[in-house]
Image 1 (cartoon, rainbow, N blue to C red):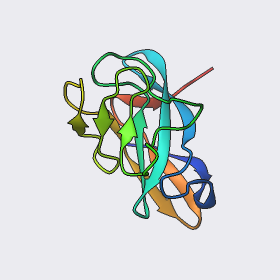
Image 2: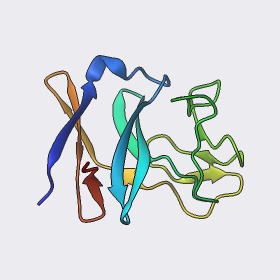
Image 3: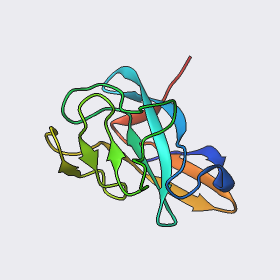
Length: 121
């Protein structure tokens, strides 16, 4: 059964703007993840390029290209579809690991599953 964890206020995510970062436990490791808004909908992914498992942001919390159309890996130049995480070009194998989000009452929540858990301290 998945848990629902409040992530941020809806207003913190602007279309094609800065991401909201958060930490998840994935594969027994603490990993960075990020949430974005694209074409009005919220999406979240592990902050790991599908080419080589490196963080992608080119500046803190910046993943979109200048047009706001693609998520880019700052190291490899791989481009990803913001709404699906699928590779759209460049050196990538597969797509980004998607994290389920919901938005209601002005709050964005992320959902755990068997692979993604909250980080426990």
